[in-house]
Length: 161
Image 1: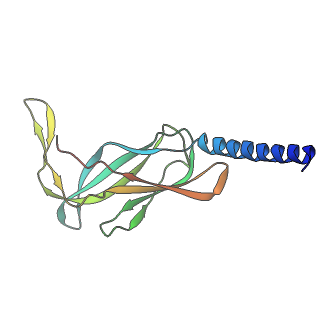
Image 2: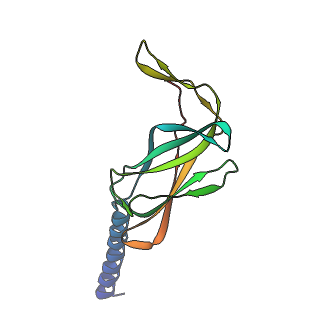
């Protein structure tokens, strides 16, 4: 092996190392959406086919990442562990700082939302039945809009005040 062959071999190895490093840096610093469910869910009581004691819980799931998500689809976990798609009527692109909503109909086991006139506040003593533990978001991201990405986000349980 002469000097020229050694120089070509060293240049090839250096190029391969630099290319690997550059690809890793590109992956490491690629902007990504980061989904986080925030706060207590909003609750609206309703009756369904003559049965009282139902409520619709609505969670807000924020995109706290640094990239936009395209064609977002929202799925909520059912009691059997399967994910059920929710109709989503939001924007086609959910950018950083924007949010989507996830809702579920649950039963009210006991309690009520009561107004206390002395403090001018509502006290929520409702206890809910089975509440979905998490939501799954599926979206596409620029530059590869063919690939569907997904993230499962735990939902905060409703808390009594």
